[in-house]
Structures are given as structure tokens and as C-alpha cells.
Image (cartoon, rainbow over all chains, first blue to last red; front, side):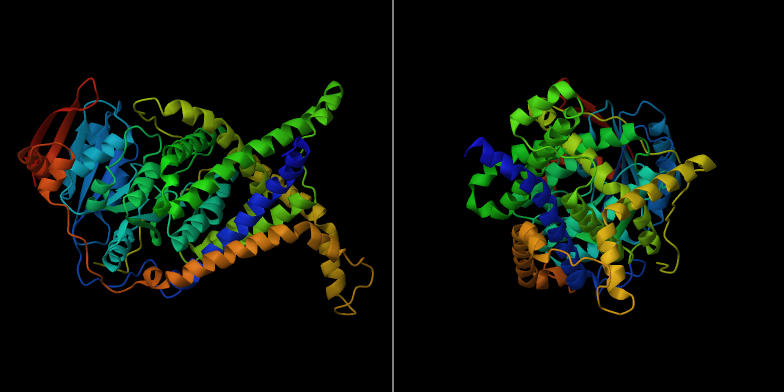
Length: 422
Length: 153
């Protein structure tokens, strides 16, 4: 293929990829809503179950002194009759350990695991699973508040489908002070929620949300538990579960109230970690693409790789557009023949913006079942098409080389993320 | 279980300075204005079509539908194909997606299977599972070196 042909394809790809995928996600969201969610009762009123099997709830904590008590007290009050809570103190440097030990006297369901040194979330989860007594494991984070009925919804879904190895819940953002967090509320519906719905309809999920998810212990064993080598434990375990023959699905009724970054720096670090971890998992899954039995995985893998390619194509085009403002570089830019992309929307940019706003409106309507006021968030979404797409493109472009380098690193530990100012 | 009790939903709003709230609102309105500016011809077309005389264009130019279709055709066709493909899968797996009745469950993981999978003696695993507080020590290779347990519930 000649260079001229390639450069002719670049603008088509840069426009076509997000345009086509947006309609695909929208269709997936509507189909999931129509088939699965339409007949279900409200999330605060789950159906009565024939049995309530015991559940182990894992809460990994690293420097969570500020949140531990609130999180565990909330968990202890969930509307489920038979559960234990296992808090895993992953080598915290603050007094998280003392707080957890003290809480065991007050919360009868609570048990504690102390890791003598910081080992990372995957090892913490493995140690929590090791001491857990029950077959169904629910996992959340040390700064997130699980909804009273989330566990009931998870258990019901497992009881209704013996092939399910894991479920991912519906994280909702509870800190909404700045425009950044308000944008993320929309993003969790328009992007995360819709993608998870579409992937559940298709039958292969890229990742569960580590902040609220549930597993069968047998499935975790088949998947080789959580891998300490990966940066994003949730992506890796999702792929391993599905490659081991278990299915994974989205349970939108299982809500969890989470804290998200409210500074650009915090947001950048979070998204870079997600991108790096996702890319690392996609690279590690590449050998499976040769097997015909994993054809569904191939489509999700291919989409992820295309999204990285899109990021590079867009960033290169925008970088060349900036060079056009420097007179000596104009000739250089024209000589490459590579198309430039203005930050101001041209006709195709406007079509993408309208498509995204349609997507946001549909997803917020679907999510209004779970959070009544979510449609108000649409006002803030005007920023998303430019700001967040650029952020995603930048983190994907930076994340790829970091992910390639990290494959050879033995294990990653964690640092406390930015949780906004609450 | 008390179903009527409200769930612990806690959306906290930080006390932002007024100027920051106003700045966020103003910037977002500017973003909407930019979007509206780029959509001005489409918006005027809709306005012209819906005002009196109803459903007729008075001042607005008829857009080049043919040209727009030419530009978007291949993307729309591709998107429709993907949507149909997903609709097929939704139809195919609707029973699984809709499942609301209890199904046979896989056998729970036995203690022996669990102990084998993590290379730990069954007795030690049992002690961990019955303790209130477990402390895990790691060796230089980041493998479990020692487990200390205390209390039971």
C-alpha cells in the first residue's frame, strides 16, 4: 500500500472508529436495557431469593485510616443475612492496621488479614480469598461504600446462571464537587456502563470494575487467582476467567459509591494506570488470538488494539496541526502528507460530538433507574468529547510503551490514589 | 432484613468557593455555545422547518443530503452491520441474559482443592479460615514465608 493510500485512510479511521463504536455501544446498552433491565424491580427492592448462600466480602486496604471505619460499618449494615467481611491491610504505613483490629471487636462479621509488607492489590486479594470461608466472594475497595442490596443482586445473578464466574457491579461517583468529577459521572454511564452492557450482550467482557465485583471461588481457582505481575488486577482476572471457560456479566443493580480524582494530576495517573494495565493484559492475551475457540475474545482484543492505534493517529495529526502554526515547519508538515486534525471541530468533529451527546443521553436515561438525578449531569458533558477523548488518547499513547516495559517487571505495589477532596 | 431502610448513599459536595462554581458553569456554557455555533446551520434548518408555514423551508438552504450521505455512507453501513450483529447475539442469548429462575450450581471449591491450588497444607488453611486476625509474612521472593493467626469467631 502506498503512503498516499495510507494517509487517505487515516482521517477516515480517525472519524470512523469512534463513530461506529459509539453506535455499537448505544445499541448494546439499549438491547441490554430492553432484555435484562426492563423487567427487573428497582435496585432498592431486590426479589426474595430461595436461599441466601454465605458470602465473603473482601476489602483490600492500603493507608485507608480515613475511610476504613465508615466503609466497614456501612458494609456491616448491608441487607444480606449471611456474610463475613475480610479486611486486608496491605502493609499500610498509617494506622489502618490498628483501626481494623479495633473494629473486629465492634463488627462481629469482620476478620482481618495483615500483610507484613506492602505486596500490591493482587496479593492482598489472594490472601483475602485464602482466609475466606465461602464460595461466593464479593470484592470492593477500602474507600468505597457498597449499596445495601448489592450483594443480594450479585448472589441472585449467580444462582440464576451456573456458568457465571464473575460479575461486575455499577460504580457511582459520590464526590461531585468539581467539573472533573461531574464529567466522570457522565463518563461512568456513557462510556463504562454502555460498554459493559454491550459486552455482556456479546458475551465477553473486557474488564470487571475492581471496586465492586463478585466471583465464584472455583472460577477464581480455574483462572489462577489474581496475578501479582499485572498492574490492573481486575482486567487480568477478567480475561483469565473467560479464557478458563467461565462467563462474566454486568449487574447494574449492584451499586457502589466510589471516590474519583478531582485534580488533573490525579486523573492523569489513574487513567495512565488503567491504560497501561489494559494494554499489558491485551499484550499478554495475544497468544490466545491464534485459537479458534477464543474468537469472541479476538473481537474485544481487536477493538482494544484499534483504540490504541486511533490514539496515536489522532495525536500525530493534532501535533502536525500545531506545527502548522510555526512557519518554518509548514513545509515539513506538508511534505509528510499526513493529515492534520484541528482541535476545533470540523464537520466530522461536529458529527462525533452530536453522536457522543446522543450516547450520553441514552446512557443517562438507562442509568436514571439507579440514580434518579443522573440526567442533570448531561449539562456538564459538553466538555467530554474534547477533554476526555484527548486524555484517553494521551494515556493510551503513553501507556503502550510503559506496558511493554512492565511485562518484564516482577510485581507492582500500589500508592493511595487521589480521591478528590471530600 | 429491612427493605425500606435507605441505602448508605452518600454524595458529599465540597464547599467550593463561589468563583470556582461560577467558573465551571461559565466554561461549560461556553462549550455549549461552541457546539451550538458549529451546529448553527443544522439548528436553523430545524427552526425554519418547524415554524410557520409548518414543515416547509422558507429561508434555510436545503442541505446537500446526497453529499452528506456520500461522506457518511460507509461508516453508517458499517455501524448498522455491527448493530445487527449485536442484535443477533442479543436474540441468541436472551434466555441467559433474562435468567430469573434458579439454575443448578457448580460444585463449591473444596478445602483440598483450594489448598492444592495455593500450595498450602490443609491444616494451615483451616487455621487461617477460623481465625479473626491473620498476619502474613513474605520472603525475599515475595512468597508466603509464615502465617500467624489469632482469635476465632
